[in-house]
Image 1 (cartoon, one colour):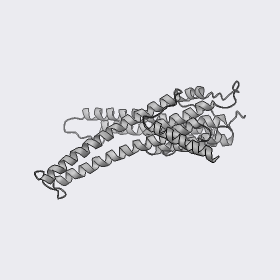
Image 2: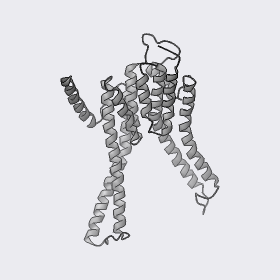
Image 3: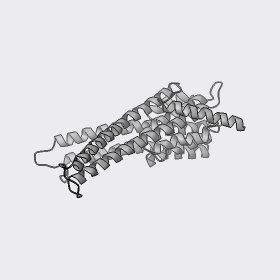
Image 4: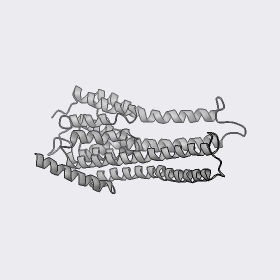
Length: 308
């Protein structure tokens, strides 16, 4: 086994890190790179898995931190405005600082993958802050020397890391499904654990996405119904029976949409919990979805055995 990164190793590593610049859509590339290099190069495999972690759990941490910072900055900006002054006053110092914070937040997320890609292009062993060293120990990656009794990365931990990152990517709307989907397509025959986790993650993320879009649709539909009843679009008067019925329907739609939209963060938290449990060694099952996927997988496996 070569310990010095080859040109192919560097190319895969660079592409895996730079895929973070696509902001979610490139999350499948690290999985493809790891799948292709996992028994060819420890260096490329580790860098691809590290890039996958940055785009899933790293994106989650960045997004939540960025949201908190923006909200706090907006509150400070509004609190420091002088009476009669508006936030969009030209060259307002507070507004300039707020804009700098907004762009700085994006710069922080993008600068690390660029540095990682440059380091890998030079054949160096790049590590993301906080995550890199921990992942190396988790996978048993030692770049400078042969590992005792094992030439390759810890296979079980590789599969668990990929499965966990699929769970963590639930925060990336729609594009987050690319990670577990790619893992299922490329590695379903090599790991029954990864196959099951990938399938249930895809189903769970599809359900979460549907809940979000249905809630948003009902909310917008309710607003349109309210506008119509106010007479702007020729709607009926509230005093009529039709107007009363419309208001009741509006109230029901708003209530349902509020429940659905407010449940999405809870579903995201459950996805993060699932990823944590998988990393800790559990064969995690989502409530209801896990059992349904388990039954489907068992039937599918039985049919495959009969055909074989």
